Length: 323
Image (cartoon, rainbow, N blue to C red; front, side, top):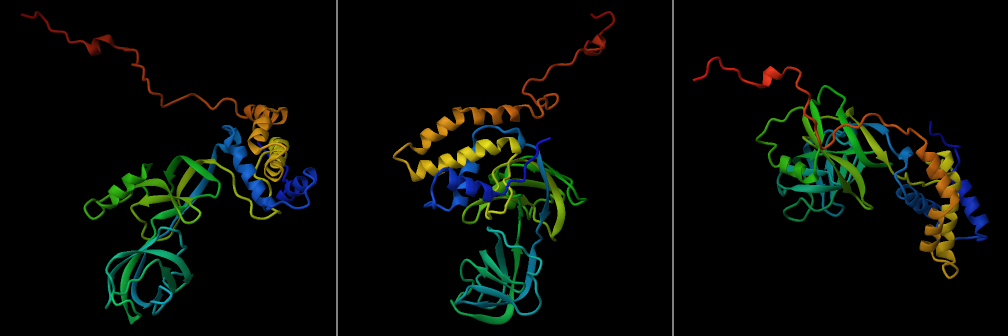
């Protein structure tokens, strides 16, 4: 079983400053650790990155009928109630307007959520470029994307976990866009397609799903995925690596720091190559290779054998006394 020693990032920071004899780095030490971690997970196909699983929650659409508009802050506010109380903003969400005096009937991207009754849009919805206070703005906020785990790099498998889902398949994002162009003409209830897209600044992966879910739904999909480095924001956070990688990682952090702070002595690229060729990295790689050496019988190959015919006569035709 792959385990960790629960080493906090602060240990790496302390070691980084002590071993390099630097009292202060020009970069934030946590930034150095994160860049080293991202390099570590990309150096080889580590087995400890495989086989993570998670349940994904769907975000339902929000129907709106009583909105007002404040032009100066690009804010849409519900005149009554809290329609956004259960809405969690994700970059790429849009609000499709369907009615209201002075409203541009178009689809506008949501920029942020400010409260349970107000959201900010990326552009104006007013035909006059002014405030709209008639409390009659109507539309639907579409939330088709699902949040992925922070350390998700690639989805290996996805299945539905509720009665709402008959089937789900991973497709190219272009297929999702094509399907959305047909959603008024085809009944695809229970049949879902999903694709990883990147939203926000900096870009982060989310799962784009078609068709939309009508309501917030917990554990709608279960995924098995390949991990990547989970960014560390606090020094108290445990390093997200197995214990046999600790030595190689500490050494890597030191190379990153010295490669940038003292580049005249030896550049970062040379240090990284020396690190990967060295015994500490090779020891970690060797230990990683001992974990789960056999993954079971291979399936899904490109060559399919024709089964042995148990009953030869079933493949032949016999005609009595042919003419």
